[in-house]
Length: 429
Image (cartoon, rainbow, N blue to C red; front, side):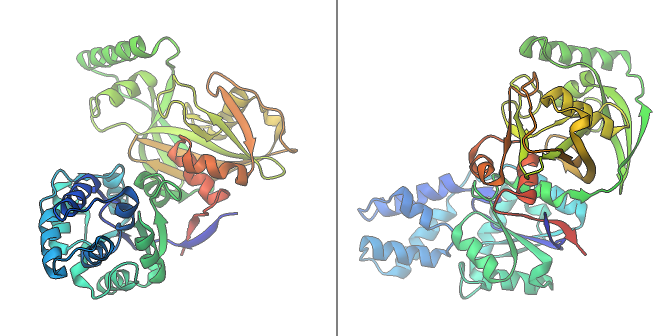
């Protein structure tokens, strides 16, 4: 079962490789620095320099390559090369994570080995500075990562205790620093998490015990706008073929706790919105349902999404999952279960709502339910939605969760409910 921890009041975020993509520029600075001294680096050495402050990096390079120049001169030279790095971009999911934090009233601070002024400049260049309340740089501490001091300084300046924050890192040194400071830590290294999008989903995952849906009809479109919607639909259908689904769908109006107000639209409108965000006004947020199905022995039911689906084609996910067409979400979820995997409602022992999941990247609000079925590994079958379906134990899932293409929400839910490393949820207090 999931293990809870306090909801964070702050996110403490590493910079290089976590919030911003500076790796290419930093690798060029590293290679050029060594080449200017007649030395050659390696992928392994460069990877090992991710995390410690720059003086430590330069001292290691001087020792490893026998550089005769005084270390203070080497440091000044390396700093000039790093200062010249440009083309810094936000990492995938960075803007989404900051947006979720802002919506949740969670402060965001950057804790980096980089110099504070340089970090501020890179955040501004990546368009992320407005979401950051505090920057703690390598020049703000005496001992950098992997010691706990950088995170201790950040906590002290925010007036928070370790249990009131989450840390997000991408390197062993950074993760060691945050954990030594007593902060719950997520490592965006492709093993713990694949991207910041998953951390954003976890932060935006709200417990829900009795979701209630209100549905109103959508307003008619003006003729010129309806024609644009039809043009987008025709173009998408020409590109993806007749398998493209056209039918009813619910779109979010507002959510307040378990109460969800929606309006009835069609996939045609959703396709137009996805192809031209905001064509209908505010970008649409589609309603969906997602099940965490387990057999009597604790195995999970997964399916590989077909190549023709709108979102995450070819990726694995917890089955079933789909767009929501009407207010009776439970009936729709069980119908999806039978249609997509062959498991009939008679095999279901319990269907219990557990959460509302908001994906602000693709525009999706899903009702997540735990579904327990009778017996061990009841027969399932492939379908047009899932060319492959399988029952898998938590241990069997671990390598798939770590490396296979997977819908982000499914990876988050599997981290919570079984696949190591376990993630804490729901928030306590």
